Length: 172
Image (tube, rainbow, N blue to C red):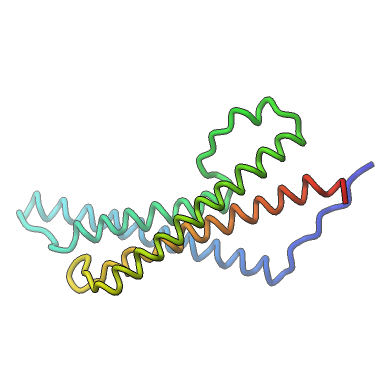
């Protein structure tokens, strides 16, 4: 007996997911390109003219943070995140699903806690009025941290709910 196909996501949700994926990819490409150009410019300016852009190094560090978290968001979106999973190789299908369920829920909770505390840090830095470089507030540079971990938490929660549905579906 074959299983009935799972219901497809509504078209508005699919469009939203495609737009979000496009936005993440475009922002990742833009920021990675900017980081590479800025780093190359800094190297050239230092080696050829013994000068540099004063705010170039701090901005490069911020771009590394943004690229890393956008990359992590993209990896979780596509299911290509780092995954150490020795146990599931030896488990039967139902136990593998249960293991995935526990792992996804735990990861969603960890990401949600990180997003919460990153948001608290962001509010503290906003209130303090600290500057990262030139006139750019520190909290603006940190925006990606709660956003990135929040998005990853939602994606792992979604994976958890899907795994729970697959595990419980025969019983329903």
